[in-house]
Image 1 (cartoon, rainbow, N blue to C red):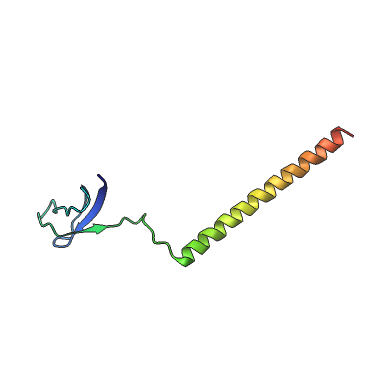
Image 2 (cartoon, rainbow, N blue to C red):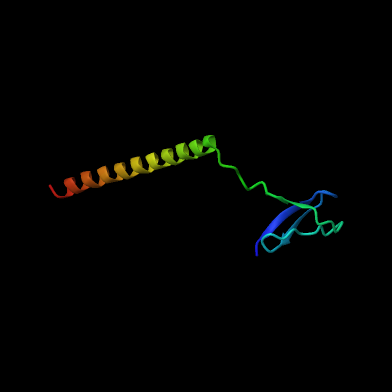
Length: 85
């Protein structure tokens, strides 16, 4: 059973509740069962713009990693050729 964040529509009290799927919790302050599920700030909505920004960041990181690996490989080959010639 998941724990969700809720906000009471009557008294605006925010609370966490462990509930079964499809169940509406009652507010612990006023007792009214008119609560709205509340999504915390860590939850985000994926849009085309946010996906593009994340993809751009991932590509930049991958490009930097590839550059570093290529550089290390060239140094290895140079040292290998120097030691075995």
